[in-house]
Amino acid sequence: MAGSTYSQAKAAWKVTLGGEDLTAKLAPRLISLRLSEKNGEEADELEIVLHDADGKVAIPPEGAVLRVQLGWERGSAVTPGLVDKGSFTVDEVAWDGPPDRLSIRARSADLKDSFRTRRNKTWKDATIGAIVDDIAVRHSLTPRCHADLSGKAIAAAEQGNKSDMQFLRDLARRYDATATVKAGTLIFAPIGAATTATGATIPTSTISRQQCSNHTWRRASREKAQDGVEAQWHDKDDATRKTISTGGTNRKRLKKIYSSEADAKAAAVAESKRLKRASANLELTLSYGDPRLAPGTKVSVLGFKADIDATNWLITDAVHDMDVRGLSTRITLEVAA
Image 1 (cartoon, rainbow, N blue to C red):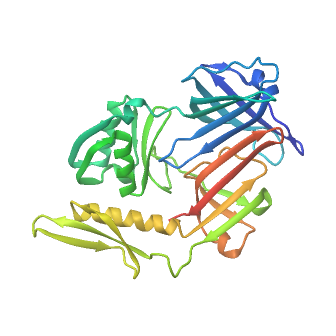
Image 2 (cartoon, rainbow, N blue to C red):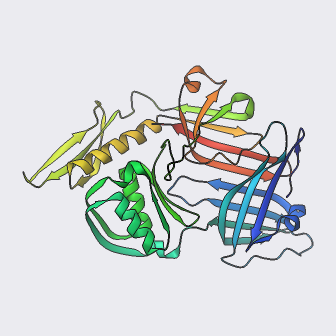
């Protein structure tokens, strides 16, 4: 492990390759380590930059899998311990200079190549849970569909020349959810849910202004903002196209025509929640980084403007930076719908 001091606080990290701990070898050469965690539709990214003035740093083989842990060794203002941030497959390496340095870029390692294969399949009279189970088994993954969604009936869903991952993400968007693969598990869960797909309660983190070195808050114009959503569906009995809405006067109309009223309503409600979350955003930088903060975490804030403190927030992106100064975290938050 390696790190530096922020007033008695010492940051720590650990990198392994195939079970071999490389931290002691890399620590004297570390220029920076950055982990960018995205929402469910994007892969997490890892970048490690190392000194190579003596030319002794080996170039990692293509496809090498690195496992990363971040945290703190000690400090009164931090929570000591390492947080496992998962595995990453090396997909790009660059060597430049002078002074010579090696840059290693990797993406989250859980997404299998088979997930990118395009397929044609029609799903009729199925549940979300059954669809997740079927796709998970196909890729030798463990299915974890949140209880709030597993029993949702799907009248019809067309997987027209889409990969399984893209199909699941499209389905997730219809229900304001995320579809991700973590540690060999296919997870399908609502955005901002109070519990995980396994039923465990998701705690809300509290961040005070004193913890932040920088902050930026933005709110969209209320006059221009869309305050509702409408979606159309095809009524087979009447052979007509019907519309359902979530209310409002400046409604957004979804382009897709749905096969049932239930599917149209689900899509309209999901889009309405997305519009609410996008109504304001907050960016915070914590000098004492916290690797426990990740997309999907609910956050309450203290010490800012009254309106900001009164808002319930949800993390959409988190960037953890480790360098000679220690560990910092930058998060982007939106309104929790």
